[in-house]
Image 1 (cartoon, rainbow, N blue to C red):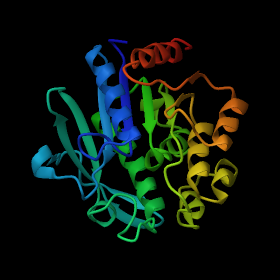
Image 2 (image 1 turned 120 degrees about the vertical axis):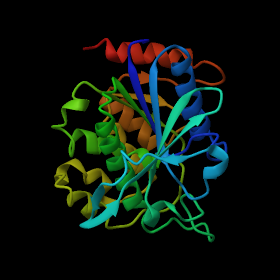
Image 3 (image 1 turned 120 degrees about the horizontal axis):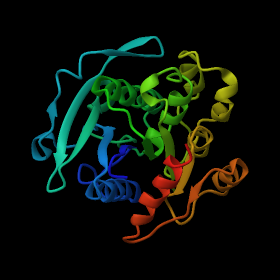
Image 4 (image 1 turned 90 degrees about the vertical axis):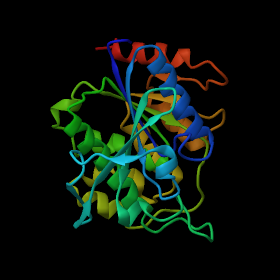
Length: 269
């Protein structure tokens, strides 16, 4: 894998956000690949709770400056970057004042999901792709972690289907245990259709809850990793029905198996 490139896209990554199963796994898997000579890049949202001074984030002017169209609105894309101490791994942060400046991650002070979480997820997916295009960095594998990153497989397979930079990229999605209750904005599907993604590709999102968003990611992936020991039954059934390459749940320091899994996926070409 030393000559390969892996793009890690996660809703959460330590040390920038509190330790969760997703934040820790995304970091540990990327670290393992990086320490084995794989070229890695990590992308995550620049949530307002992240201390930019402590973590030494700085804006990358040459990458910032474009506007992304989200539901017919121009939303400025700001790109920031930092290096994880001691690891020499670069982390890119997708930022926008409207979506990510607030001092919270997914919910408000009453623990209610933000009404624009759907737009934040769309913006994040598009922002990742547009930034990687500017970097001209063609990944062999794109590994997705967390629900806010889970529209990326759909957008890569549909909205960016003609983008040559990703023509050979394999999409891997890690599926975790249920991460939120309730629904995202009921207009989420219409906002995705605005990007000329056909309705038959997004019927899964008729009810935009956690399971349906992750199910969409699974359906548009080339391989699946069980990120949690237990995941919702509905998602297990989707994975089994699609018969995709599957890496079972790995605990502790068994991340070497991730590298073997990546090799098996890339070698299928």
